[in-house]
Amino acid sequence: MNNNIETPESNYGQLTIAEATAIQEKLKGIVKLSPMEGEIKTIAGADISLDLYSDTVYAGMVVLSYPDLKPISYSLVKTTNIFPYVPGFLAFREIPGLLKVYEQLPVKPDCIMFDGNGILHARRMGIATHFGVLTDSVTMGCAKKKLAGIYADPGETRGDYSLVTDRGDTIGFALRSKNNVKPVFISPGHKMSLKDSMDITMQCLGKHRLPEPTRKAHEFVNRFRIGELKEGYHELEQWGLF
Image (cartoon, rainbow, N blue to C red):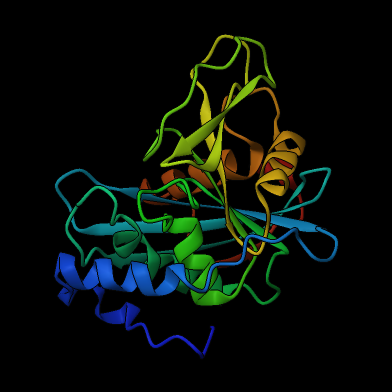
């Protein structure tokens, strides 16, 4: 945890929107968007799953080797949602559970890809950025929906992309991750550049719309929610079992 930041994430449910906005503005001043330092050998995908009409949150991270993207381990936690659904503030719903998931990992991944946004956010503080600053970790976002900004529709071929801009700033990319499917939205979170976020995503594309780290995280938290996987930290000896 970044001890220089006094952010009571355990008390997020008690925040007003004005207080949550103030936290985002405070954290914004700490974000680092310079090129990555060091080599990536592991990357984690992070996601949550919610039961409809329930306050229960199923949070998870799946760690994969990089660049060959072989799943190594996973961490799962069930928590209770403490913050209301408010667009632009979803990190306050998801951060508490994901912090517990991260703390369970005995060896932290070199990079974390979130099913959500990084700086592609009206206040440049999507969940990937928020989490990255709190933990001082290397993070990025890969979202299924655009949270802020404008963009031209990219070409229909896998790998085509266009810039997402907001008030004169480039805040991410609209990427066609598979032929003839809706684009995903890529942005750096913390401790990486815009270019880094796109380069890593391209390396993580497989046969599906979602890059492998977030696709696996999505799969695991949903299997956790329906009882197929157990809470806690688990190492994977044979991926074929999954």
